[in-house]
Length: 231
Image (cartoon, rainbow, N blue to C red):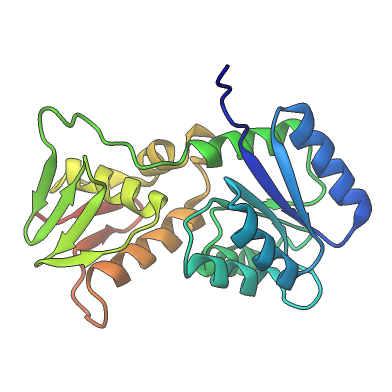
């Protein structure tokens, strides 16, 4: 009999009590787990196990969480949730810039973490109404919904699932101003409506990929309101 494979979570933390707690949360929810206790081991296990999600502490030996994020992002788009006792906005933004998908501060509750895990695992490019409009065209930007492929003036742009979903929302509503709350709800979920720093970071990353090395911005900012993709 065929059985659906369990989704696997890689837990990276050098504190044995935290690791045990995280394993318990993940295991009780039906996930498989893999463990790493330092940054170098985290990279090795990520390559060997190919997890569906990574839960990563920042303060780990050998290589810190920031560097682990950056290195994983060079070859994988696996969702990464950072767990940290650091609560400054700068640390959160630096983690997102390094490639993390979410940032949860310690201490955290079991239900909150499980909600974050479920949300992260759902963040896959959504094809939209493929039968009606498989490719969205906005100027020289083409967004192929069925292939989750983006080109700009014929140049292919490699986007993460979150970046693709963000561009898809903007392209679907090109020329319209989309509020911060709307984009956060559509791309991250309703629990993230107030997390504007997430949106600012990913808009910056999307702009850099659409027009690298250029001052031209396809996505315009409407101060205090949101963003708009030019037609």
